[in-house]
Length: 317
Image 1: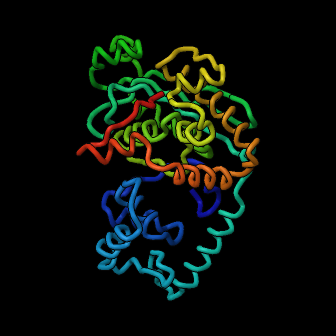
Image 2: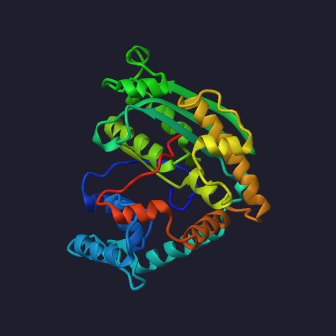
Image 3: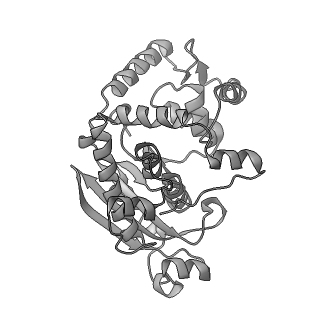
């Protein structure tokens, strides 16, 4: 993605192979604060500022190519002696880009749903079906769907849930064979899903494994939106949210049916956001972040503190 050209769309990057290489790759487009940089480098979604700063110093201070600016941001060291000037200019450009947050009506969304062999993307589970609904101008414009050969057996309980059997996928392309189609449909759009972290992990892992690239860009989660914009709902699963809006799911636990239903949910939630006066991407992000931080500890938060391993609610689409 060109520096600051469009910070509101998904792009595909060649995956660096070491932590320092990941840091250099992230800093090519300009300086980053320690939290953003270490989240990218270590692939840790939640990281406190003090921990991030210590990690950045430990990882980067011994490499001559990195420098910590007076602002606390990290940057690549230039060979022409103009590092600080370029870095500060880049930061000002970034500020302008953030200030020029696009209208929600002007943003294109790629609403993604994947069916998989299990829930652990990094422990051998694979995608068996993917669908991407293109949402632009307040409407679902196009839907791509494809069965995928996971190159491993599908557990019987997964076949019972999704109705996707090995016989259905064994002659289908592997994910690496549809990677170009998938990335072209994600490019220039905001990656959106119901429980976006789940779908993002699987798509990213398949691209990493198959063609050596990783996704980069903003994500929008309709579970998170529903939690904040529909506080009256006690549950935010796709079944409950679609029932609330009166949306019919064509085929539950199939990628196309769930992706189209999620796209319709997104459109309804964007209308709710508009009624609240949220007109731009930054408006929405700020509102979701503020409301989430003010709602206090949820039952899931309390369970996470009580058990050695996190307990996850089933928000899968």
